Length: 401
Image (cartoon, rainbow, N blue to C red):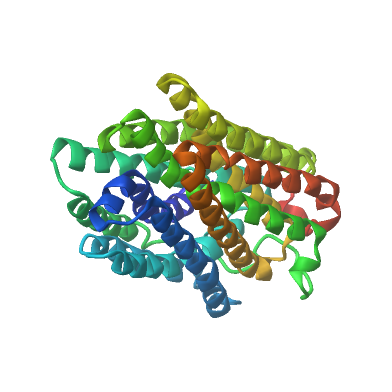
């Protein structure tokens, strides 16, 4: 099994993580410098996710039936790298918002193209571990970015603008490593399915609803957790960065160890995958709530560690479900629709948590994340009853490849 394609696509995802992960760590410094509230910054992140969800529809239309997904992924990676560099020159919240919007538009390729591309590069029997390996790219970026932020801001005394300048250059270099990535063609391993509305699938409708609820958990988590650690426990930028890096290292270990097991679960009974995903979502949400209400710092860090280790495991499982019940030609469009659902949930989550923060403080805002997280778990679990009937058949020679 060739690892270069998943490594190359993962490197593109890592470069994108530089913007989002650094923004989570530097959120208190940015809000103080620009004179805005945490809720305003979180709203910008949600708007960025909305752009991430809308842009892929255009990209999916451009690449439909054409093996150019790899090329589009590389070009858009270069665009968000330049946006990262440009953030260092943002003088107000509007400029920062515009740059995050550009980055979000470019980031649409990650949502629409990366997973469908990997599904065509690798046979169905190993998709679980490949998606898990690709999923490890995000926590890998979450290690590299905060460690870089910690080193630049803590050891070298640079402000957040200089930090973003360095991250932009590193992101550009990372994108160049994916230049040998190639597209094998759409639907290489699957039976060609007839056209139609994918949302007629009961499984996809429920997973879409779960993504909306999951967005209310995912979008505010990084920003509000960072603010909570600073306001409640006085952790500075370098300490927050190191803690985030430790959580991401734990997530990488969990993803690599779980990938092969995910394949085994899916091959034995696809209906078990939604149940496992629901349990992980629920545990992650409850861990965030426990961390927000913990009376001492060690318990806070332990609970947040559990939540941040479990969270990256959710998307590979949901993506595997989506790929399994969507025809090859429709996967980019369906991934785009899921991105919109995630963004809608993020906007709702930002509004909810900003309201809660005003009444109960940051701790109350973080604790409230548990509610939409539990709802997302229930919705995902309900697909265990429908996934078997909605599976897309694969070519016989690829069933156990």
